[in-house]
Amino acid sequence: MRLFLHHFVVLIIGALYLQGCQSVDFNPKDEHPQQNPSQFEQLAKFGSDFALQLDAKPKITCKKYIQLHKNGDWRASWVLALTTVQPENIQCVNINDAILVLTTLELQNKINPDLIWLNQSYLALLFKLQENKKTISLLNQSISNSSEHSSSLEEEKKELSKKIEALKNIETNINQ
Image 1: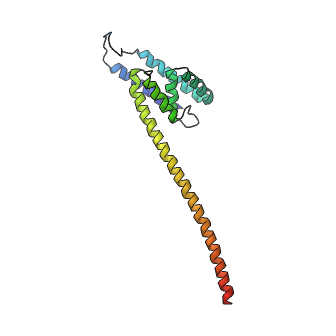
Image 2: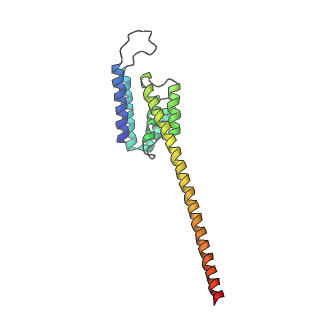
Image 3: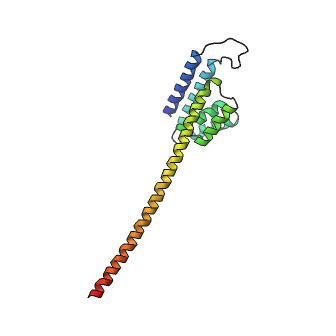
C-alpha cells in the first residue's frame, strides 16, 4: 500500500510541478483557465486518505469509494482505477473496469485538463497490463494442456510397459 501512496504522491507532485512551470495567461476568454493548484492539493489529500483507509480496511474502503464513484465523484473513480497496480487482494476494481472508468472520465471531461496526460499514461499502462495478463493466461493454459498431454503419454507408456511385460511372460512360457 505504501508503494501505491508513494506513486500517487509522486504523480501529484509531478502534476503540481508542471502546473507551476506553465506560463500564466490572464486572458479571461481562455478556454481552459489556469486551474487553482489547491485542486491538485485536494486530489493529493483525497488519494492519501484513500490509501490510508485502504491499507487499514481494504473491503470497507473499496465499498465506500465504489459508492462515491457511483455517485459521480471523479476523484473516487480515479483513485479506484489506480488500485489496479496493487496486489489482487487489495484491488477495488479489475483492469477492465479501471480502463472503462478512466476512459469514461476522460470522455466526459471530468478530469482536470492538466491531469489528462497522466490519465492517458496510466491507461497505456493498464492496456499493457491487460495484454500481459492475457499472455500469462494463454501460457498457463498451454502449460496445463502440456501437463495433461504429458500425463496421457505417461499412462500410455505404463500400458505399453504392461503389454511388453505380458508378451515377455508369454514368450518365456512358450520357450519352456
